[in-house]
Length: 238
Image (cartoon, rainbow, N blue to C red; front, side):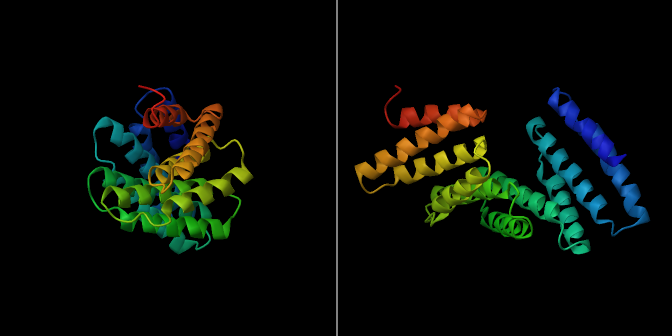
């Protein structure tokens, strides 16, 4: 029943309805299963997914998502303790740490610890299953970490280059990954902004434009927004 209520919540969210009551019922159902077997790794993992979704639904409604995300992370950790090869728990733990780091960066907090944990969990997910989509998600995290460092006057290091490398790998596996195109385009913009020479700057911006156009083609809505920002940056739009 826990999974059924989570699927119902997904359908409610897709139709603009509040999924949180269904998510809370999903959590309650998984808690009943865990009363019978506290080391049921998949129940821990699925309750973590429900908590993660609850936090995701809270944020746009003005509720701090971090308490629910924290509960999700504890469940993912416990699922991994019960099954050290639970690749989905590693992947969703990583994506949750990445979102938590992004939220902290937006609030002026230091997100580096959460981004580092996200990258470590993505590494483990990819070690267990190199075929999964974690390359794109890890690339997003490298981009976020580099942006957070740059915004605080710290050296972004090789974060942008690593974001590009991960997106390159993701696109060899799935050439229709709009998020990978968009993320790679943003990394090229950042490198173009700090380029030492005008030819390098122009080349980076040209690559970014190509990536944003591909993102739009593959239905990544942020691609169009970022393409517009690039045109304003380069003076092509007033």
